[in-house]
Length: 261
Ligand SMILES: [Zn+2]
Image 1 (tube, helix red, strand yellow):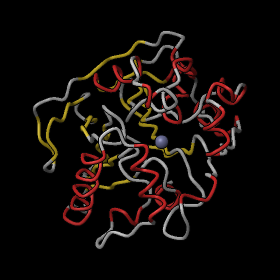
Image 2: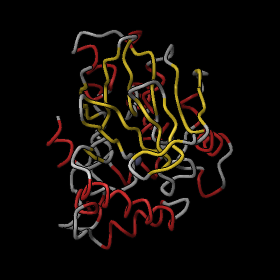
Image 3: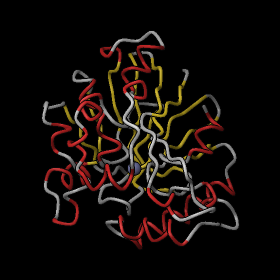
């Protein structure tokens, strides 16, 4: 099995998330996993329709996060450059359905989209405070969603894990959004864990943890459940310290992306 790491959306948030202890350049880290029955994507970044029509993302997001919106960065363009067609993507697993993660699903209309049932419900029935993060237009083409309830398995101390085949796991990592999850992919004798937006800066999962107040403030503001977010961030920090066989990365950290890609 081989895995590619793609950046499917560069962002330049105003203020850089708060200085030196925070990323200034921000990526949208997408995994492409070659499996026996086709490709699996983990997250999708922005789609070609978002890039053609940025109002789909909402003006506050575009003004505050300043996405590059370059069609060359879309997952579909990068997959074509690798010699694949859209129809080669059989499955997409989403860490959550925020607009910078779910935008690309429209470029792969025949793929099954795997998502935690709690997250799909949040995206379809957002509270007032959630309305700007989820953009229904990104799934107005009617993709085939496959929802997953947290399962009964444990994985390195994380509970409620649900297997999507032998080699891919959906791991509840609540906090950033209501049904936020990590996606673990087996890669030989190690695991890659895409932790979505459980943290934003690699220093947050180092020991001792380091971060910038501005970045903590941003994550607190965005969190659906801030206590769960902080607990899960601490769990991930312990995972990194105790288990070198797990390679952890977040969706937006450019340093982690450069290390892996
Ligand atoms: Zn995000």
